[in-house]
Length: 310
Image (cartoon, rainbow, N blue to C red; front, side, top):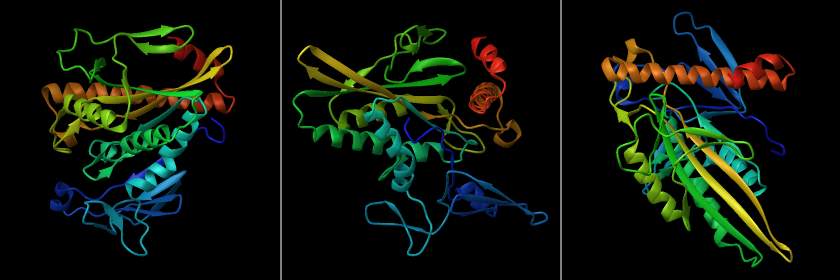
């Protein structure tokens, strides 16, 4: 992507009720791109730099529309700011025909789904991006250009792929992942639904979110037990004298299940099995990202090739 490669952002959320009841203290502070962690036992600090460090822990009020807004003079980061920094670039690149992916990664209960999907009036990156996309589509008055948008939504639960837009009981073993020599990897049988406006996408997201696998743990009352992938396929069809040309891009928006420790979540039985599958897949993702970083730095090329091909 022009001017873009990989960006990393961190965000700290408000305490939930469990943490308030436990008398928890915040050991995180943020200034600009720097996030600082303080050891409560000896007050030693360590600082880390990211592309963005979002303070969303305190210093906000809720207005009459239910939106969380920053108090005067505070550095509180609301949903719109997170979208402007992270989601807007993804959408801009899609217009230029580039594929893009945005991941929300973190411990269970850390607020990933809030940042990605949002709650109530506080819409997250996904709905804001879709809304902005259709605003631009509706303003298109170029008769020689057709704009087409399609939507799919899946979850990976216990290492099996399930279509979240289908209410029927998933097939045994889940959907199969295939590879096309020209277009790359795809999920066989996954519904790709054409959409004409933002309202249609909103309805599909609500349907898919309801179908997503969640359960209660000691760490999170509505813990996501699966990785969710929303794909928006955006195609621009240009009419020419000799026919037509198509510029297309896939926007993959991923709300990963949270990493967790069994002793903290109190997981047993099915919950323990789910947690094990979640941690295993997150570990694999970490290895892939590490391999890609090494490749970009010119290191361990042979290791990357053999690992990805296995």
